[in-house]
Image (cartoon, rainbow, N blue to C red):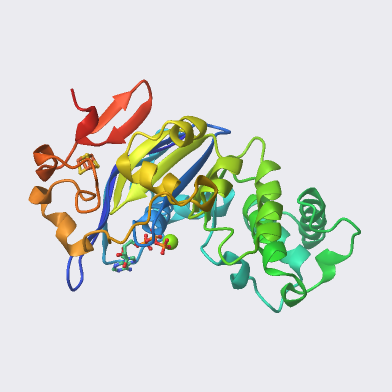
Length: 310
Ligand SMILES: Nc1ncnc2c1ncn2[C@@H]1O[C@H](COP(=O)(O)OP(=O)(O)OP(=O)(O)O)[C@@H](O)[C@H]1O
Ligand code: SF4
Ligand SMILES: [Mg+2]
């Protein structure tokens, strides 16, 4: 189990910025979770915090527990074992970060050499197997090709393969469908559906993709978690006004909501007296919303909004 407990991230050089504010997630073994939220809401920073890949000006508080062991307290040696060996991370735009000089099959299998002391031959064989598993290489032979011969969607799927080749139990993927057309998004979705025993945490802007790959959905806005629950429950019965507005703005829902507002600026989040961060855009806003709403848990469906505080 990987558990994020009340995690906040503040950047402290220049103007102090609160990028992640009191986030909690419970990733049970084998579970699939998506995080959705608009640009700048803190999705990538949270994911980078979970594997301690943030720059030195980041101050992380709270706990990130891997089977009870706090990742924030791990020494460098233990962190090296965990990264890639237990938790793999597929970065935003990761398909473009493959090494152009190495054959794809070898790159996919390389973590196996580092974490499991496999030979080069075993690593390449695992790369070939995973490319077939993820339907990137139905006919065989793609493992010997270089990344530039792969489409964006194929590279993204190859990156997920690389993420799990050393047997990582947790896959953290940041925007794996960014810039891909609908057909390629479907192929990436297919790849994620091949992850059975692995635990998945995936950041996305795409509600349909989130619905296709996840059982749990976390909605982020202005550094906070506004809603968190079973994906189908959140989509069919959105509690938070932001989630409801986001769903109403989707073309398949008739674009019934056209939003013209922006989230408040990040440097204001350190001011705890600013109230609900969605209040300038919210049609349900009342005087109570001038204070920060707490999180209410309604039978496991969590929401940060005064409407649900009894
Ligand atoms: N190294 C850094 N130093 C200072 N501020 C940072 C740093 N990295 C990110 N931020 C700020 O933290 C906030 C959250 O950024 P983050 O990248 O997590 O957003 P995001 O939700 O992933 O957005 P997107 O959907 O565009 O990828 C932003 O205001 C960003 O400018
Ligand atoms: S707390 Fe108030 S302003 Fe914020 S989302 Fe709920 S109703 Fe809207
Ligand atoms: Mg991001």
